[in-house]
Length: 386
Image (tube, rainbow, N blue to C red; front, side):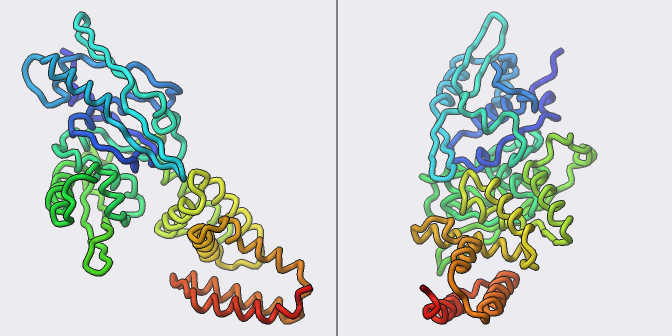
């Protein structure tokens, strides 16, 4: 007897790019399970999508039905699924695409065939970085589509144990932009049931804190915990199933360690978020270049604090409508070199840099003080300009 879909899926893994995990879409719980089952059939070395198939009887079982398959019901489900759109935000680009581009029922062989939209390839195939992997079994028993989406989001950020997500963004990710518009309803219908179900049926649990602006809830901060699942939970994952962000963290951690510098996980997550804001889709390459430049200098004793400050400067310039490169400390320094500077300037600049780094190290960006020092410096330099 051929094993059931549920039995087959126990050791399968779902691997998705983090961009896809944070995409905006609305699927029913049945539609999500179909998609996730198909994703679990992708092999790590696949360079193209295949026609994924399974017995129609097992497909019916996957949908949670019993008895003989009713083809009209299944056709309605796949027809609706082909109409569903997901939105992916990459930098200033917003991409809209479908999940499934082709479905075929073969009553003679008793199988159903499905194919992903080819535009999903960058988010599901040959993933080397910025991806998340979890066991399919952790979501197959969940009864709520909101629980599935929140579980995926928590898995994406599990490596730092907590994450703060703006409420509007969270609504988009779980597909609740047009429902439960009052926060207390969203909490009652989405957050609370997901918290209970995820704790009961998966390898995670979580608490959350409401972040407010005045009396309004504007963000949710999740505190993520791994929950033992018995003997199966201690089986080592294959190396290719390690979270992409974990691999990236290990690489950066090694680079910092080579120079005798610490890189705590939460600080790493912080610079990743800042780099994504500053550079969009090119954030990894740009962040790597910045770290190369910083480690290539001898006048920066606290590279992590300096890096955090410079990234914030770039973001501030972008928000003011300026080119983010104008936030570069190196560009500012080169421009100043072209001036005929007095002897006292080097010492003043050194102290100014020290103050900036100290503010960043303390986690407090004292904008007023920095601006005062910058204005004072510019005023003193005015008479030396040609």
